[in-house]
Image: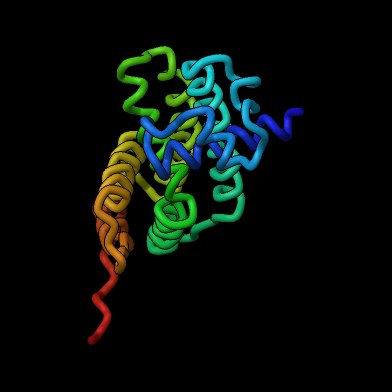
Length: 193
């Protein structure tokens, strides 16, 4: 039963992120999940309940992704940190594009439904905690503030890529420059042409 519910919620995230909030209907989610008609409405009696379910499911999925990212990522210097963050941003705007777009749609939904904010904030706080530790490890005099600046930058770059996709998208140079400046480390020399 829980597996079917997760299947429905994964499909709801996909519909929300790929087609937008107006297309988030029971029928669209049932079709995307490949389940019998009426399955989504059996789990979620109204749109508000479906949105609540999506928020909780998205938080759990993103926490798992970030935990895996943090576990696999052990940068030894700022360029390695920049490369790891770049890989994650490319993942978030590439293979996980719909999930990232769904998160932004939920942020907008939270402006009308403040009760969604705690769950959306919890996920970000977990990630800020990890990022703050990385900033501290690399010598930041204000690790939490620098982490928030980095994540605000990443949100802006991701939002722009989702809204105006560039086929040659390469966030690496901007991420390296930002981290280099925040952490006051010497920039790497530019590669020869």
